[in-house]
Image 1: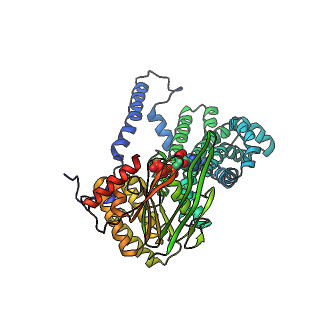
Image 2 (image 1 turned 30 degrees about the vertical axis):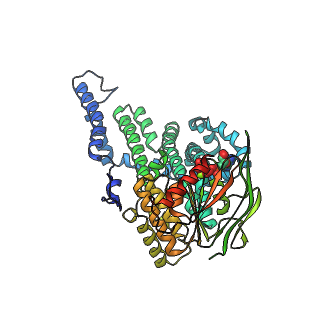
Image 3 (image 1 turned 60 degrees about the vertical axis):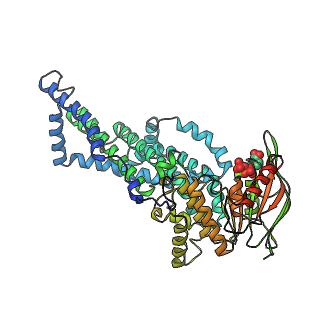
Length: 279
Length: 248
Ligand SMILES: Nc1ncnc2c1ncn2[C@@H]1O[C@H](COP(=O)(O)OP(=O)(O)OP(=O)(O)O)[C@@H](O)[C@H]1O
Ligand SMILES: [Mg+2]
């Protein structure tokens, strides 16, 4: 007995297949439930006087400070300062690291000459360079941007190399068999397959950037979200410190989510491709 | 009718690798006239894919030469289209974009649309034209690859076991479609297969290959008229004969 008739055309439209992603509402609720539980517990402990408010202010107190800082524009000013730095630094990275990565991926000699030194540099955390950068570039913006560039350069650069070198030779051959012009070959084969890797590098680079930037601002800055933490410590206002720390986490999360969203929009095929379901 | 389109002249192919050399093909010669349907039949590893790749211009023979319409084949060309053993779709292109891979820059937009519509309809993928390859089943992906070759509108189709990943029903249907297409368009078709019945159902001539080194052991004419039936006595007779030749 046949499983389906001779002209077996599937009865369901393609959209049905694509829409099987998990329900965002329930997964979102699950993700929020745990932090909520911690906050409630923390608040109760604070009210009961179990913890010293100087070491660990109550969530309600932190929230008040947060609203205050939002009202008087303090938070926005510092956050904006950090994000502007991040943007400059990251754009510089993309401008250099992607073309250099393509070059390095395409030419073996470049890799041979440069990659040992890069592997060495990669081991040094960006924070370690801050004093040197300040010495060279001054205490102003330039040194902070240098830290950001340093922090994000390697993920972007190395993933670009990976992307360029790991283009599937079978697809290149298919392109050849179907007479693609060199330009079409770049547009339809090389760029899309390198793009997935480059995007992974960008996401990694951006989150590295964010961490390194806050570190740099902790050491020397009068603006920025990191300097806000120092200010809180100097003024003995732990609630301010907490607001700054939580903002760092939230902003980092927002940046990553934004990039992930962009990635899904630009490359809807990518997930299946990476899990090896390539056809 | 008897104009020679593909002429394979005493080609050999030896692969050298770290662990030794493999004589994939040795002294292979055959001709294929225009509008002929030829099957290449043989067990796994006997060099069928290698032979087809050489005709496609993707691989160079170690010695000998292949002519297409009298000209030596030096690389891929618009008059030949390959369906590989695996689908090899581009993951970032939708089914219709994959199908129009070879013609998208080269045809007028309205013509392009017409060709793609027709070929997708032929392989039964019209409802999935906007889907990405990862949303297809294995057999659907293979059908998309066939659509890509058809849309290229070549003189000769080079098919490397195009139906081996499909279920029996779909395979039979696509074999019939291929038959139809061949009789309508009079394309020259070279079909690699390890399925005796498939070769007998479709082709006018069967090259039986034997392995290590890959050679053409025998060429069998199939004088049965179309449409063919698997249960006709001629069919069964020829099948027994070929089976015997392969085993001996
Ligand atoms: N690129 C290569 N490098 C080295 N050896 C190769 C290469 N391609 C094919 N061979 C060898 O050539 C021989 C024939 O391979 P080929 O792929 O042509 O076989 P086939 O008849 O298509 O087999 P199958 O039915 O399993 O697809 C095999 O022994 C294989 O190991
Ligand atoms: Mg093969």
